[in-house]
Each structure stands twice: as structure tokens, then as C-alpha cells.
Image (cartoon, rainbow, N blue to C red; front, side, top):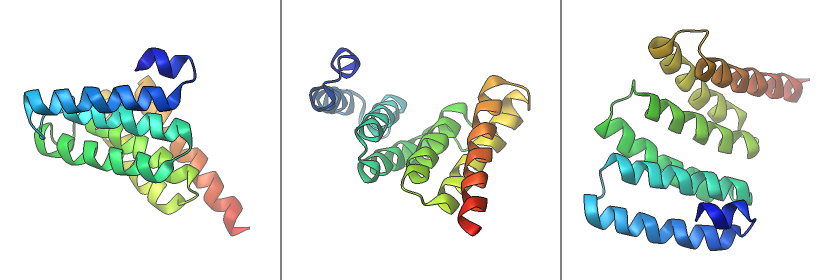
Length: 138
């Protein structure tokens, strides 16, 4: 799937990602970290295709599994929050985007500290969304 994605065959990649997710789900069940990872990867692929609603659906599944299995204060959960926040940003739903992205910032700050690259990256996203909100208000 990743090779097809790298070659720009996003539909082919999505087909492969779906097959992979089916296999992983059969092996581990619906509530396993690898299923969360698979949903997150599909969400990013949908995002790349510009299908933000499908991306949000996949990221929502990933978040539900991550929160349940890994906990709210886990780096993978924070990453899922950041990913869904990005999808909402591109849909121009800035308030929802900011909510998810700031959850990510908070978790990364608590786990890694404010100067860690993951925290700084999430904070950059938060700043970008706040700028978009301010421009929208002008």
C-alpha cells in the first residue's frame, strides 16, 4: 500500500490498506492498537486524497481504540488527535480542529516536555489554526 501511495496511486493504496486492516482485525479483533494504527493510516490516506470526511471517520475509530486501549495520555492517542485536528482544519472547522490539536499539545507537553519536537510540531499546528480563526474574525 505504501508503495502505491508513494507512486501516487492513492486508490490502489487505499485498496491495499483496506485489505491490511481486514487481516489485522481478523487476527487481533476490533480493539487492538494495530487496528488503531491501521485506521489512522487510512485516515491519513483519505486526507491526502482530499476526502476529509472519510479521514475524520477513520481517525475517530483510531481515537476510540487508542483511548480505550492505550489511554488518553498516550503518544499514539495524541498523534490521533493531531491527525483528526488536521482534517478538521482543512474542512475549515477551525474550532473543532483547535480542540483536538490542543489536546495533542497538552499530552505531548506532559509526556515529553515543551521543547520536544512532537510538542513543538503540535504547537505549530495550534498556532496555525488560531491564526486562521483570527483571520476569519477580521
